[in-house]
Length: 440
Ligand code: ATP
Image 1 (cartoon, protein in one colour):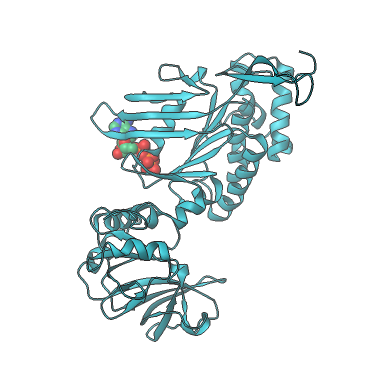
Image 2 (cartoon, helix red, strand yellow):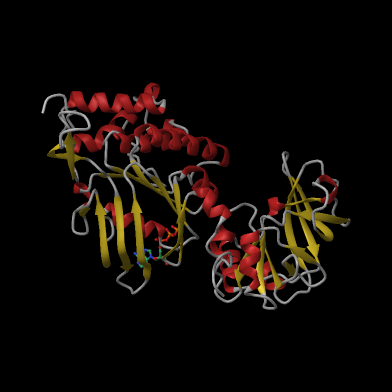
């Protein structure tokens, strides 16, 4: 058929699309003439279908893992240390075998395909650069192994180097590069392969804080430009939230929630996700829902109305039963600096941390801290188990608030914190599930 765009494919998994196209010879009158058109396109979706991984020593690292990653999507796997995210990524790369279920790349089951035939490129935390080779040779190495013509290799390496701002460094050895430049070489080595997917395992964790911020913006922009399907592993929730089209939160080998970053933040499916996403973390207090003209929660000495109709309706089913109330630090403000009329929590300032654009204060209030299994696990990941152990059963709770830099809060002085009661979260004490819209 004349004029139809030609779709070319590169090596790797290819998906066949079948389109039925109807053409009317006289608009509105004649019956359409139908033609079947088959096109082959490189659609690099990655699918985990009920995948599990059990290591030879019996460790179950990943269980019941179902995830569909679309062509061109940037998905971040995030979770505490040891949750199984690296194992999940390595199974896609073919560096670990799959114990149960199937992994598909571009619609093709790859469980038994060797890594070199999967058309994916991995970027490791260690960069794994060859110290004795120049930047050019490091980037060209994989292509030489594949016996690509040298003109093609040069063109690809130079193109990637331009993209990454490495043109001037092609003759240098890795030891003469900064951490950020080495990281870019590792990215370059993946880019030159023009793979169907990038698999990145904590690629920024060896960089200092400032460089991480810069590099995460660079990787995001690069991925958008290249449009290559990317799976990115990190335990840093800020990286996950700023980089991913979608973020998959993993805990003990299980997928807890997969959603765009804003949805994870606003509608966490359970207490674990709520506590893991957001910095500083959400505050968790024990509370009892009370019905009335305005549904509220009783914190002991204080009551807070719930100005969120959906949550208020869901809380009615829990009336009189203990729940875990979640308040994000950014939903608290010093009362004198907040909009008038907001309900308040009062307490004693224990710690004040000035961060420039905001002030983080730790305030001791008369309410009971929620110390559930989920909260313990989150504290363990943050290295705060001992602090949490002291809190269990206490009559006061220390909550963290993110205040305007104009705050006059001082350690040892009392403060009234206005609460944005339209943004409260509530969780079932036993299951940890979000109560919003759920059933008790
Ligand atoms: P981290 O962020 O610390 O790298 P992770 O989420 O990437 O953690 P994995 O490395 O996937 O976690 O490990 C998941 C679980 O599997 C952990 O309990 C780990 O100890 C275990 N594990 C990993 N590799 C092996 C192995 N080769 N043999 C046995 N157990 C393993």
